[in-house]
Image 1 (cartoon, rainbow, N blue to C red):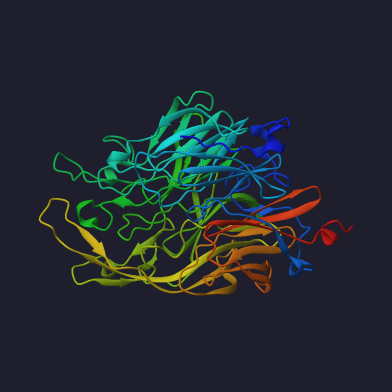
Image 2 (cartoon, rainbow, N blue to C red):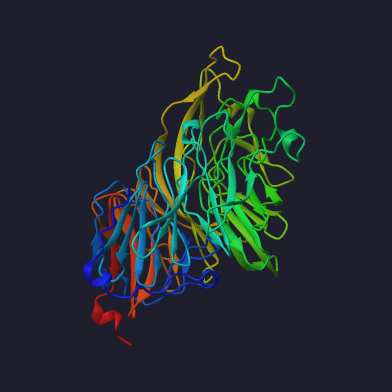
Length: 522
């Protein structure tokens, strides 16, 4: 069911032209055309009207309250309109005033409403995934439905939370789910018709490369996992997609799925026109701690060891920072970005070596990080000006225990995560060393990060404060309490000579800007 509430003044106007996919090749200023802002995943903006000299004057420009659940999505900004989502709804909002333009409500048949990341746009069409694992194509002008397709059967345990990625004439979309016998996959659909162009499974079929990393033979236990529930990145020059994949299943019962369990907990490079695998790197081989490797594969064109390289960096859920050559997946660097106790060292391929003493067991074992991870889905950022990679990290523990059920697949459980505190770490990508650290307070923080050419970082702490930090030092330049924790990733844009920073806090979308007298000053 769709509910469209058009603002009368805007409905009377001619709707602006939609998004040309070529806009995704540019560093945005008056647009934010994809989940991460551009294809690189850096969450960096060249805007600098708001900078270290005036950040203390930030003021609230407007607030939009959609009367819904917590906002985990990052809005798109196209031609002065913001497109915002929660699990079963999409809003179009005037980016200058925060006024609602239209609202779409999807009646989900089932699935998981855990959260939602946002929409993709191609031409005048929006693409929206649903809790019951469908993909909906909407008219960006009024929210009317063009078509709906099923990505997977929600009754099997699938759902979808991710923001699709547009690559030329491909809508790249993934699935979520954490059930033992359902496989993960990534697929491409035609933006005009929704027809399937290709599908790549994260678990190889018998006889395919990588299948030897799973139990073999007729007695092999059914297995699944490797979900593709976060938005990946893309290099137009190499014409390669980069995607992180989720954990294997059964989640903690590793003894019945011996092997590396490819291509779960991996970073993969795929050809966007065919879905064929180009290379892979596995941050957590044979994962037994629920450490998805779906964290953003951030693309850097930067110097490494004295020469320019096309790099890929990921701060992974297992507590390690990885640097790869994205042309071929060559490992360059592995370092810890938070305290961990589960690995004995690093192997010749750059992968942490698990300590058998930290595997789940009947009497339990204390592991750091816990199952929620040293980081998770909150967006990192990279500033080409500072050369620093920024990530929100958590000191979190879990007691992992294994309980036999008498069934062939066994069963594993764990207690709740035990949080200590959260911190923002600035990592030198060349060495993996922590340049500075900004404590975010006790408990869990799930705020994403935005960096800008104004020398700033925008994020939130675990106490409900929105923060502006100096990107070079981590010093707090401005903060404001917004009445709840920030559970989304901030974005920025400039319209009519005024820079806005938009952040979702619980169920409210806030837009911050300088007073007009300062933003218009030359």
